[in-house]
Image (cartoon, rainbow, N blue to C red; front, top):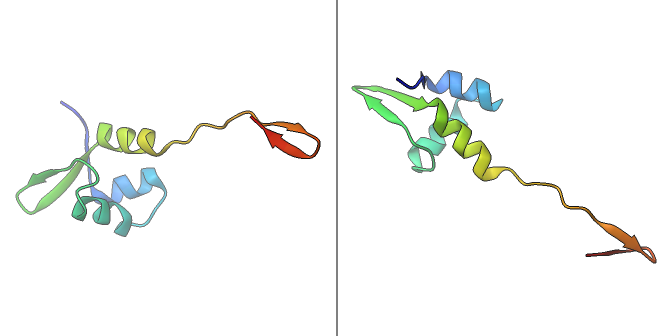
Length: 69
């Protein structure tokens, strides 16, 4: 079974306050599990959220003081 994280644990892994993962849940921007009154976030949902927001660097060449593709 997959590891389910509390909001506090998810915030710790993201390096944010608890308010941020709660907002992600409220806006349905991340998968979550309701267990009665408790909310848990699957660890893979955090990995997917981080991967979706990851921006890879691009190589920039300079010519005559200007960036060229």
